[in-house]
Length: 158
Ligand code: MG
Image (tube, rainbow, N blue to C red; front, top):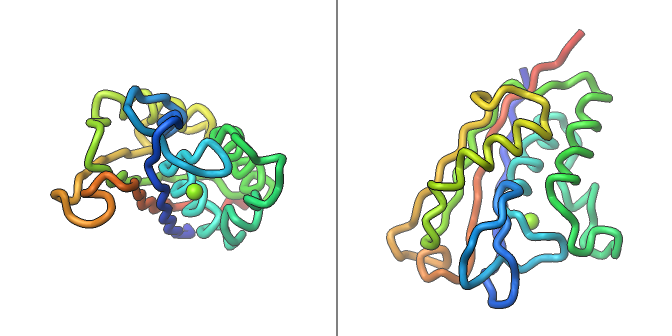
């Protein structure tokens, strides 16, 4: 088994869509980034790449590359899954904690879980999603941005 951790932050701004775990969530602001800025999927990918010893998403999808402008992070996740497959790794489980003051994301967690499990090709139960606020403290508490932590275990086959 191999363990990995991922952490990501994106700024919340006006005139951007809010995409988390591949799900578009109605909100007055969205996350700013070169891709779709899906902070949750980014943290998960970094955990998976970390566990596999393959660096981080900045290395695989540089934000200076116009190819990734507005990129659908679920497509990037599919690429990471393929990289892991080539190295004979499969995801055992992942636990992901989104940190956001607003909006309330709990109604969307099941849909995110389904989308992520579908791209990874695993049972939904292997992807655990949680969301918390930071009690109005710090940049997430002020609504200036969102952060996400992810940990995962990979199983090395053969
Ligand atoms: Mg990111």
